[in-house]
Length: 640
Image (cartoon, rainbow, N blue to C red; front, side, top):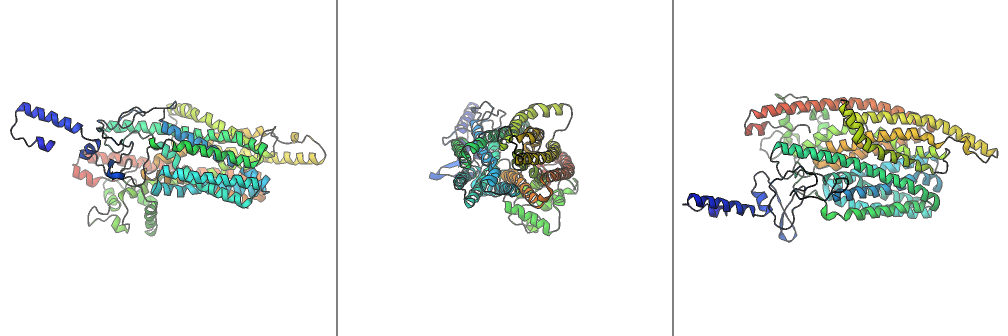
């Protein structure tokens, strides 16, 4: 229409005005697909769909199959509106229905996970006849394997199936595993027990690294495939997204503890009344319900598969984990440390000499025939995105490396502390039901910290950054284990006195045992530590993760739990001669040593972050005095 109209050679002023108006009307009536192609600021690729239909691969919200005009303003600040500014129905929590379905799914899935886990250590000792130390080790090995599998689940998700399909496929494997474990419990079959536990660990490995980032993906307010009209629009939309994501992670962890609370209330009672078979069957039923709820919203989810060409923020394909490993291996072969490599462009180099350093590593194959970048490093096939992802990943890993000791202590609450409670005066409750208190405290403390303590500290100028919170949490969990060690000494003394009284013919031996309520102080302290380390660490890992490797980084976060549980299993297998009370004190000392290491990592992170900010400011000042060509040649990737 434009070309046809402009072929008129002689027109009056009124005719020209009329033509211009008709052109605008014609352009506004074009399909959204055509307009997005003609728009210089939005270079979108097309994806050939079944039937030959060509459909735009939108990042935040997929276009409908009918032809619609493109939105005039692609950026908006309303978290309850989509990319076309259409109002999205929100729940009582302010989330869209898709996020609520994910939160409900997570609640039911966590009920299933913590339900079988709550009675597992007692199942080992009571039904299978294993010793306490062996039961603790087997419990730790099971949890370790369950947290190792997310690494493979994340690779499958990011590289092959995508988050949605990975959750669905591995969820059904999870259900089969619980079914096998249920049958094994009724038959007292050791082999079937470990087959069921293996399938459970494989199933949970596909769900854990995908559910939380998949829910956060539904909250992306900015349409990443469109350029913002102004820088202020970008900042406002990014701030709104960050606020919603932070709120989502708090509620996500709240739902985890809601499922945990329900499982600790119900499953131990079922185990006492109906046996271990029924105790494993109920989690299987809840998991089936959670999967049905999850798939019910498939048509409404924002699903981005690894084959989608439009990726959030970077608009590039998912980073290959193997390519990241190739970069690290090359650095090792060249005897260059990760710090010197990654700090080259943003910490160690100043703005005058840093450009040469950056050009060495930021050239992309194909930019020119004589580039001295990646080709010269024998890393052909590595993209600029993968270089940037590797840099960003290297900044997150030192923080995550300090978490295994925390998990080594924390996961003993489901094994060592349960066996400790089993030797105390329980007043008719089941020993594993003490986990109810932890879940209740978490559900109470999360909104208290989020809405009360954190803002109160910020108003007084007290730093409550991610790393500061994690530091405080590490101190608290060390304190809880020192208290637990002292309590364990008294528990063992009371248990011996109760056995002697029973041998002497006394009937009321519970009076010799320590009251189970003495466990409350250590449970309260570790609940606060869990909020400061787990909730904050989860948020930190997602916020600092490379865009195309969020599931991998979330799996790395869970991998720290695997390493911690393996360490705990080896610790009790090798130091059982010390006595359980002394091992608890050893765990507290190890946590304090780990805290000292974390302080050094915190200083390193703050220095790197400050240096990155200074480079950003210098780069912006220099680019403002140069033309577009100079800006492109001098542009260097900076720390996020």
